[in-house]
Structures are given as structure tokens and as C-alpha cells.
Length: 502
Image 1: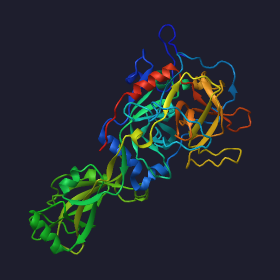
Image 2 (image 1 turned 120 degrees about the vertical axis):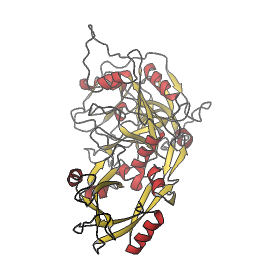
Image 3 (image 1 turned 90 degrees about the vertical axis):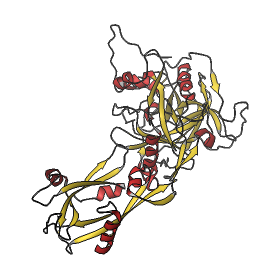
């Protein structure tokens, strides 16, 4: 067991998340650091939609986590190592609380594994590996700490964090589970100590996204609705426009007129005068008065629309492009309103407003859908484990076709070797001979894994990738040693309910 101590006089030297950790809910006299992720159901719903929209385009665009560069890949050392702080212990997997583990030889992938997706401090879409874990409310995910905290940019928890079990090419067969609260060891939260590079995240009930029922609504209902919606403009005749105005008592949001030029300016009292919109740049919009000017009574209006990423990138009009706080791609159009003569240059439109009901549906609790692995701590090395993950980085030896599309596994005995990385304060890792690369980080190390039941005990998570023989190729991976303090963090996370999104 290792503890990071504060030197005499109280001065401390720490990198990364020191300020964030001290400002959060973690306390210096506790092993547990707790940080909020999606704080409301509405926020969680927006995050799920961000990843699922356009047939999972954001999921497909994500790349493997790349916090480890070549300078981090070091040769393992055999001195030192971990020390147990309590007796060995374990918590049984979901459904195996009163059963024993059977031994079989075939290898079956566990249903519990998947990918966690997030947006880092640079705005990049990334992913790591993870697994569902036993907990009181069946809502817990285990992964690496660096797949939850943005140590690369020294910022807070990763943005838009979700877990997708069974992920495959943009598909979420068991739903998308949005992170609610991240639990880590205080030493990782504050000091970025990679001997504590693990995290347990409570997740909301999963959601399945797609289909739904399209419903035509009024403009007021459309504005109020927070889900998926659409609006379509249809060109109509001048007489249809006039009927629309008469029916609704004047100017309405449903029917409107537009002009590319405004040479025929008149006042509102001019017989047959038409109020039209002319799109302008933001600079012209800001310079125009929002009231009368030369009898034309010009005023202003804005319309913000959500667009796809490709529409956002290809847009070259006068509107203002922005990615909002929820990660939506938006374009704000700026209009000046004028009274003009009724001429052939004026075009008339009717806008129809739609909402999509039932687009986001509750998928239930994570553990009910895919099960959950057990948890073990203070286990000795030299025990066989199966490690699962989604490696994606190219491997130098040329025969490991890692794509990140499907999960891979390694099998062998753990060893009490250390990773030589002083910058990451590593002194107590355990290692396994395995050639998996980045993308597999966060993946579970399963002790006593039953291939028949696809269940075992999480006794580590992949943290580092290492070169033991010095040939520039990854041949060992390592995990923090799971001790009694790890169990304390796990128990704190495992007893908290998350709730539903919809």
C-alpha cells in the first residue's frame, strides 16, 4: 500500500487535477473522490442523443484513447511492488451470489464488456474499454481512471461520458448508459497517481434511441419541446399567404415572406405593403436599429437551427456557426424586417413544425440487461486472469490486426513487476504478458473467469502498455493493484442509485 504524503510545512507539489480535486467533493481524510458527470436527466438525455444521432455518427468518429506516448512505454522492473493492506476479499457477480464457478475450456466473450465514449478537453471524441460491475442498483461501470479524468489537458471529468456494452460499428445493442457520478481514489483525483488508475462510474438507466412517432404541432408546442424535432418550409402563393394571415389575425410564425432585395421600401400604411425578411450578416444585423428607420420601420429577428456535422462544415452563408454546450451543431441566421411593395421578387412560405415522440426510450438498468462482473481485492500475483478490451492502435510487429471494432483477450498469470514511469508515480502495478495496445485501456482483468457463465471477478483494469524486451513493441500490460482502499472506493460507488433519463 502506498500513500502520497504532504511534506512538512504543508507545501505540496502536484500536477494536473490538484485544483479540481480540492474544489470537488473529495476530502483529504478519505480515500474516495466523488465527482458529478451528467447532473440532470435532461442533460443525460442530450448526451445520449449526441452520440446516437445520425446513426451513431459520433460513436463511429471516436478514436482510441491515446494518453500513452512512446516516452511512457518503459521496460518493466522487478524490484519493489505492492503490499496487501487487508485480507483478500471478493464480491460475487450478478446472478452468482450463491453459486460456484464452473471450469470449462472454451473462451466466450462476456456480455458485460463494452466501450466508454467521451469528449476530452481538446474537443476530441475518444473511447476506452470498460465492463459492467456488480452493485446494489445494478448501475456500475469499472474502467481506468484516465478514461474518466482528463489528465492530458489537466481539466475536469471527461465531457459527454457514456458506456455502450456490446458496442459494434455505431450500434448500441443494449442501449447507451450515461455516466452520473465518477468515483476514484483521492490520490488519482488530486495527484494523478497511476497506482490508483481505476474508476467506478454510476450510470443512469440505459436509453435506446431511434424510430419514434412524428407529430405535427404548433410553433408554441415546437418551441417548448426538448426532444427531436424538425421544421419544413414550403413555398406558397401570395393568396395562400394572405389567407394564412387572415386566419391567424395578421403576421404569424407559420406563414412569412422573404425578399433578396429591398429596393421597394414602403411604410406599413402603404396599401398592399408586405413585411419581409432579408437575411444579412451578423455585422449588418448588429449595426441595424431595432426600430424605425427612415419610415421603413426595419427591425430584427434571429433563427437558430440544429444541423448535422456535415451541414455545419459545408455551410458558407452569412449565418453564424456554433457548437453549443450540448455538442449540437447550430447555425444562427440573422434577418432584418422591412415593409416593401408587393412585387414579384417577394417569395411566400409556410413553415410546418414536427416533433418526434418516443424517439428516446428507457432501456432499463445496466446489470439487468448484460449482468455484472464480481469484484476482488488483495489477491496474490501468479494467478490466472483473462483480460478483455478493444485494442485499436497499430502494432509494430505487423501481425496484430487491431481495429478496435471487436474485443480481444489475453490470458496468463499476473506478475509482481513494476512499470518504470516516475512521471506517473507508478510503484505498485501488477503486469501481464499481453500485446494489446491502446483502446484496450480500462478493460477488465477477470480473476476466476467462467467461460460458460461469462462471469468472473474484476481484479484490475488495464492502465499501461509496456515494452519488456526493448524492441519497440508492446509485450506487457499493467494494472493498479486492487487493495482494500480500492474496495473502499468500489463500495462507495456500488451503493448509489442513479435514476432514469426518460
